[in-house]
Image (cartoon, rainbow, N blue to C red; front, side, top):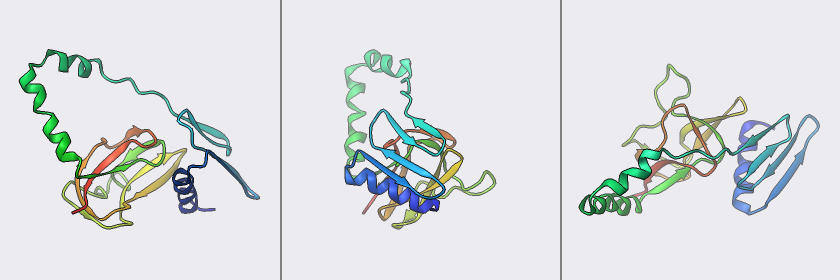
Length: 161
């Protein structure tokens, strides 16, 4: 079983609503659990979601701002609603480039088609290509290069128009 087949299996399980799928082949076993607490791969290890602490400054900042300034950030949120969010299908480390000496897969303003590679996510020493499921224009990259990402974390905003 190659990495593409494993990725497709993970996507299928996530979309199907199944809570657990076990696959046993001659040379390996995979268990995919769709819980928010942990995803298990019985090929020698566990991937566990770890809560990420939010910066304390971000929580204190809105309390210190006047009411006139707090109304302004609501407008960009309404503008973002017309965009489609591309989310991480797995937990791992997000990379915008195929290798350190190469150009990023996509930049802000780039037009993508369904199936174009947007980034890679490294999980357990495997580099998983994340492909676009929609056609459109990249509006915003929401994650810094080489950053850890969680399952279902927003990665890109895409304008489908």
